[in-house]
Structures are given as C-alpha cells and as structure tokens.
Image (cartoon, rainbow, N blue to C red; front, top):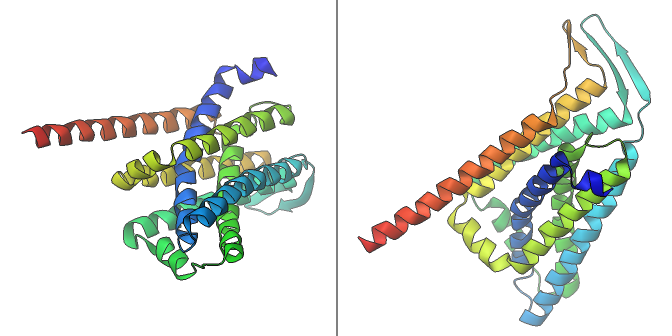
Length: 268
C-alpha cells in the first residue's frame, strides 16, 4: 500500500485531484452559503456543518457504488455492424457515460459562467427558506450534484493506476478528505480569491472536460470500439497529468503576475 501511495503517478494524481476537488468544491460551498442565508447565524453554521458532513458521506457512498460497477468487466452487449463493432460491459459503459456527462456538464457550466453569469445563484436565491429542515434538504441536493462531479473526476484521474481497486479507493479517499479540509479551513480566503479571479473556475471546468474526454476514450478502448475501420486507442494517464499540471501552473503564474502588476499600478 505505502509503495503505491508514494509512487510518482499516485502522488501526481493525489495532488491534481485535491486541487481540482477544491476548485469544484468552491461552488459547492458558495451555493450552500446562499441556500442557508435566511437562517440565523447559529442555524446557518449548523446547516453548513451538516452539509459538509453529508457531502463527505455522499462522495464515499457514490465512490463505492462506482467502483463496484467497475468490477463488471464481462460484456453484456455485443454490437457488430458493418461500420461499428464493440463489446459493452458495465465498466466500459460507466466510463463512456461518465465521460459524456463531464463533457456536457463542463460545457453547460462554462456557458452559464460566460453568457449568463449568476444563473445558479439566482435560482438558489429564489428557493431560500428560513426553515432549517428545508435548507438542509436543499443543501443535500446541491451536495449530491457536486459529489457526482467530484467522484467522476476522481474516477477519470485514477482508473487504471493499480490493479488493486482498494488501493485506488484509499488514494481517492485521501484526496477527497484533504480537499474538504482545505475548503473548511480556508473557505473565506478561497472565496475572496475565486471571486477576484473567476477564470480559475473556468479553468477548472475546462479541465473537467479534459478528464471527461479521457474517460470517454478509455471506455471506448476497453469496449474495443472499431469505428469506420479504426480501433480506439488508449490515452495514457501521464499525458492527462502533464496537461492539467501545466494548465494549473500557467494559471498560478497569471494570477501572480496580475497581482504584482496591480500592486505596481497602485504604487505608481
């Protein structure tokens, strides 16, 4: 176990998944705060704490279900056409559907961020309630939606890292725990940063789409897709890690340089 967790690919996956978990989780925290805004301060804090605990439990429950599906490797649907052949299993179907979902989710969220910024906030604001029970129910729905995104992201980044599924589960559990702790401890500071630099959220959604595409390709490869005379190939995880790592590094540089330039302009 220790050998796997301290290996290069596992460490890289852990860091990237933790960072992306924080980026995606920021919207989760923001929306939960809006949903509980009509409660008094004590009830709001209690509702947020319950919400965070529920998010933690939901993610692990979804994770266990998803990795059970991944054990279904036998083909249950064989397609044989003149232009397309494939053998669909539970594992490959999960990867394909999950990849398509992340591509759809990333595309629609980017559209809302750019074309209709604040749509989700307005929607949640209209459904605000001064009732503790209704607020917790609303935050549960919010947590379920974001937990699904995060767990699929974790699946896309870690599937195939090790033949032992339990070891991969431990890796994801560590990443999810660290990302939630970071959100809890540095919530206010992170909210200020994300509000000041909305491009970070756009980058996170773009990377979500990248992972979705990788899942789609991997699902096609496992299903032995043969489309118009071409077999589906496998996209190595290292390529995905490099692309995500460089994107996050460049974003860090852009934010840092803009911060220094703004300070320089103030001084001048």
